[in-house]
Length: 272
Image (cartoon, rainbow, N blue to C red):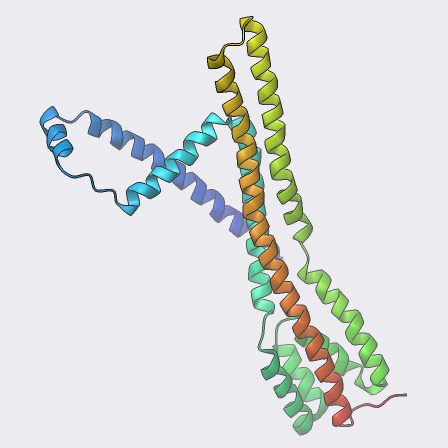
């Protein structure tokens, strides 16, 4: 439930940011119109003064270009691409937050478990596992819970529960992969339909007029550009998440070996 809430929260923030950006750009257009109606004297003075381009102006210009291209590409085709971007970012942010919570100091945790076993036994170590978040603590708890059944049972438990934890970490990645693939597909679909419409315009005109064809082709290609940008952007997040999962899995494997060594060294369990 908490993960689902985090997903919807991230989606709401992204949607709110998009609406605020478009609203701010509309306000910027109104300001530009009012400025154009200023007296000629002020315009001449502004022309004589050296032009100073600030970072805010450049940022506003980029936003305006993105907004213009979005409208030129056709909202009915660009909107699905934008939805793929928003949903993909929501899934990516949710995974990054969850994986960040899973990350712990493995070496420190292993030392705490070893000290707890030496001083308070298995129950003291299990209590530390209960208070620690993440897959490593969960694996340790399962292994310690079966420590009285022999070292072979502990090893099998660690392997089995490690697979379960990996599945939980990779949860939602299939949807991120879907949005990476779906973005360019929707872009290509918009391009193909735009090309069909361009040829329909040529057929209606009865002549290949560059002015008629160029506009339609330009609009058609914008959807492909949007889809490719979405795919590249989400692919960066995908690779980053995979790298975090790999790092956590490596720590899980190293920690599992350490647990077996600790149990054997302290004679908590033995092979049957």
